[in-house]
Length: 215
Image (cartoon, rainbow, N blue to C red; front, side, top):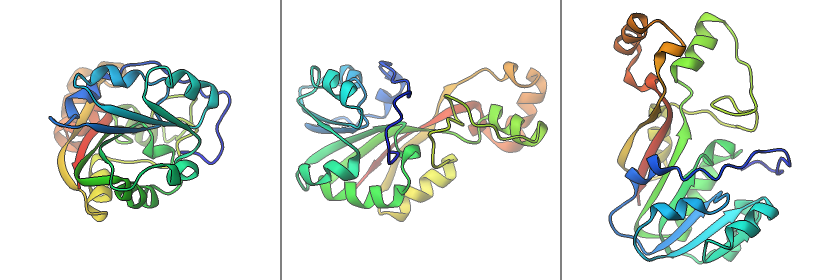
């Protein structure tokens, strides 16, 4: 997460149901880093203990109405309040790209996860066809208020680089794939887009990458 909270950042109450497909079968003690309003919990059918971390105090207060315990602050600020080897599921929906040091985060979060625990979430796909068009055709890279090139993003990932990140920290890849397939017709003619899929890979179809990795 960023070192300072942007007071103008727009928090979304989106359920992110597409990420629920990456949830493991069994879990009891859940931690969501960057929990926003706490609405993702509605995707978890089984009873569980659900903690959240949220840097925006106003949003954290709202999340506390839905989660069992919410810590207000940046991850590194509340780290000592998290029990060691405790959580069997950690959720990071569009969070890692906001961190200045994802490598440090992955090492620290492992200390809070029990053996066999899962890390689940999503991250923007910098290889999405819209971004490739801007970079390769328009020869431009413009930060925006939202989306893949959100100006609050500090890191950018492809599916391959995300896999390598997890593997380098001892996680086992259980499931990783593109989510949120945005029609290519908005960016290239359909025939040309299909040709690009064949040449560049099917991953360019997806705005985000969903993942489940295990300790």
